[in-house]
Amino acid sequence: MTHNLIAETITLTAHGGDEIEAYLARPTDVDRVGSIVVIHHMPGYDDETKEICRNFAAHGYNALMPNLYSREAPGASPDDAAAVARAQGGVPDDRLVGDVEAAMKHLTSLPTSNAKVASIGYCSGGRQSFLAGCRLPLDAVIDCYGAFVTADSPPERPFLMKAVVGEVANLSGPLLGLFGADDQFPSPEQVEELRAALTDAHKEFEFHVYEGAGHAFFWVERPSYRAETAKEAWEEIFTFLARTLA
Image (cartoon, rainbow, N blue to C red; front, side, top):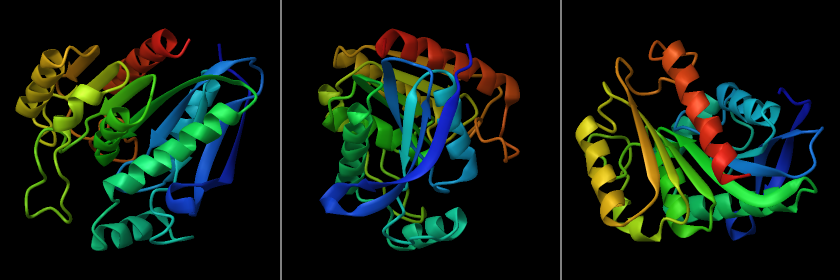
C-alpha cells in the first residue's frame, strides 16, 4: 500500500539548543505508526536523501532527516556545506548523537507516533546510525555500508573518524546491516569483524552482503548505483521495520 504524504522543511531544536534545518516526511492517512531518523551521507543533506525520506513516508513511516551541516554552512548547497564540514573536521560524535536524540523527540511528539523510532544511515551516516544505536534508546538500527565502525579512518582521509565498535555492548535495538561485497569502506573483512563483535555481545542482527555491489549502491546519481541490489535492500529494510517498529 502506498500512503498519501506531506513533506516539509522544519526547524529542529538540536544538540546544545541549536536551531537547525531538518526535512520531515510523514503519511497523512495513518493512525499510529513507527518513525525513522534518516542520517544523510557525507555528501550532505541532498535531494536524493530527501527522496529516501519521502519513500519511508509513502510506506507508512514518519521520517525526519536533520541537516548535520546546518551550523557549518546554513543555507549552502549540499556540496558546499559538505566541503565546509570536511574542512572543519566533520561532525563531532557527541553533537551527532544529540541531533539524533532531538529528531527522536520530535518524531515521538507527532500525533501519529506509536513511540517507536529507528535510525538509518548511509556511508558515514551508517557509522553514525550504529553509534546512535549504542548511545540512544532506539528500537531498531540500520547501517547501510557504514565505514569506520570497526577501524579508524586512514590518515589520508579528509578528517578522522574513530572506530565505534567498542560500544557494541550498548547497542539498544536489533541491527540490520546492508553491505556491498566489492566495497572497501567497509571492506568484507571489516564487515566480518563487526559480525563477530555483535555475536560476542549477544546482539540481535542480520547482515546482507550483495555480490557485484560496491560502496553507495543506493545512490541513484552515481555510477556505483545498482538498481537490482537497491531494490532487494529496500525490501529487506521494510521487512525489518515491519518487525521492529510495529
